[in-house]
Length: 292
Image (cartoon, rainbow, N blue to C red; front, side):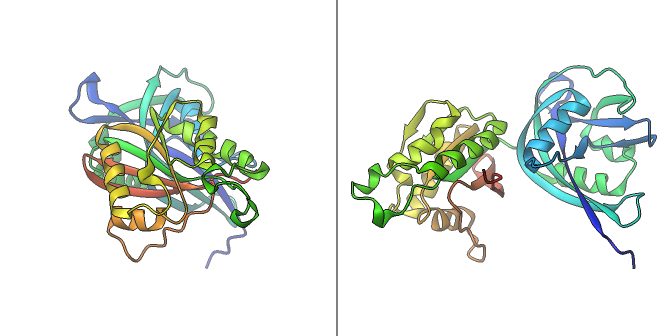
């Protein structure tokens, strides 16, 4: 049995674009590393204090010169490195290529090559990368991503003397909202929807995007109606941020997913990345910023 003393965290992506500029099929980008003479998925180590999703987007760009937009969580991989007692944990996301250009060769990456997604496993050097690509190929086409988030910290309800709907974020909550917005921007949201309380509105304001109010996401509203409203938001496609409240979100997510055995409790200033293919929910992944 190999004793593992250190786990090195890393992140990366399966980054896709329409094949040949058309709408049929997809190409993904792979990298050739001269140091190892291998073909792999773009990935790299987290910087100190860096969030894994931020690292995934950054490393993809550094290795391929592609600006990738996360759409769905893919399986993580773990493997022993060449250093005794050191294991690497790599977290992956499927990413839509937004902007790209040719990457000049250097000592780290000799070539970043677009290949038809179905042909990528034959080129990849490692079985664990091939498994990640298989999970990508098994995903139906992603048509929408909705980030459903809970408002950031707003003090204690019993200590607020005004109308509860006007209770603002406290000092910690302002910082949490800023941290959350940094992650949400990686999804390149086109629309923002907020429940009506002030603390919900203040949570999405750091995004700098005009937002709509929808009381369907207010505490005390019907979870089924809120789930229907969220499906309607997903139906228009693209990426949307929706801010709701803590007592509504767990039953809303249960209604949306049909999963009664999942704990959907959501801390303030965190949320869920919901991935849709048409009207079908195909993935949900926690969004938990690093606390400031």
